Image 1 (tube, one colour):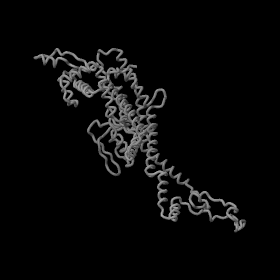
Image 2 (cartoon, helix red, strand yellow):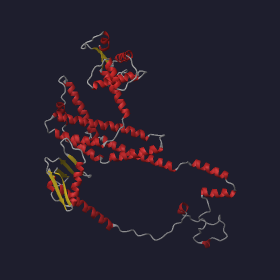
Image 3 (cartoon, helix red, strand yellow):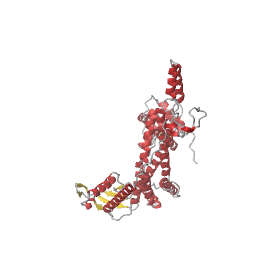
Image 4 (tube, helix red, strand yellow):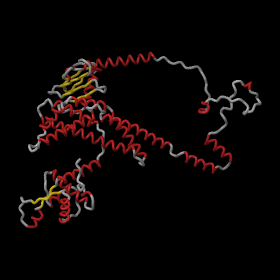
Length: 498
């Protein structure tokens, strides 16, 4: 395994660490503007643009550049293309500095570290939807001749997968730190954890459906063909060797295996998204338990020890013995026995002059101890017959299912049709059609311009494409008319016929 040079990040330590870091950032900004080399004047100007405004003479700047050169972070060359009028101008503009490969790596490492420290992870359902859309788009693009569009779509897919991986890792770390957080303000702590529980519950909603859509999209793609066409569309320079191309393809295969590991592992092992589902569920339970303990601690502001100490102070301050007895009775609730009125089942067997010690024992109910009342045995209540209610509810549910299935069967198009082809509809059927159109219009269009919507049970899918012309559609119901663009509609029902 390759190791990072030990002195690569030496510039981040010491008294002049801020100056060294600012100089590297200045060269990084120059590279973004396609300026590969800077002289002393160029470095000074770039330092101002990155936020360095301290006084700095030429000698100090030259020493800093020389030190970075000794650390192999900067490279120095002589500029022979310029025309110099004086010796001082030659000394000032002759040397040109540029970042070495190690300097670019060091600057990238610092920027990445600062970005990680400032960033916060997130569980974004939008990323899952974007992955699903890119997979659908790749399945369509593989049937077209454009290799560059295949390459672009594949890079977008890998970018979304990397965002999912990084955000999930950071969010999981923040979640574990939140579960271990101690000593925070209780009000803020309670608010943050309540919001986190809501956030996790929203993410878990329809997670299984999104996972299934991504796994189905990955199955439709021929990976070998995809990577070969992406390699052609990448337009690598002619100087790239065959080994570099092989490594490029191997990197693509590794990314694709990472996608399968997240959503549909080839070896049959549990998908990582399922582990994420388990972690989120466990975190919700843990957070709710912590919130219950916080609420309980708020309800009980003092401990039992503090209560007894305060009671002792009251006893010490009582003015008379009668007050002590009254305080004792109020604090502990000890009074005369509540079972003294109970008697033997056959009182004639026990003489009236018998002492308590000699008299036989009397059974005392456990309910008397807990609630102060004895049992009262009465007639058992009749159990109501609810079979008719259950049958009516089952019949109503069956009728609703049949009505829904019939409605989906009427709306199924069996292919792509115009919206105006529906013509006149029953109002309830029109409401279901309007619901499907709303689900499709609420999603983002894919690379082909189509919008897809799915019902909550996943049995009905609608694909909406923009109208090819400016025609309008008018649908008529018993309650009015509906007008809008004449979309191309494709409604598919699982297991049904149009």
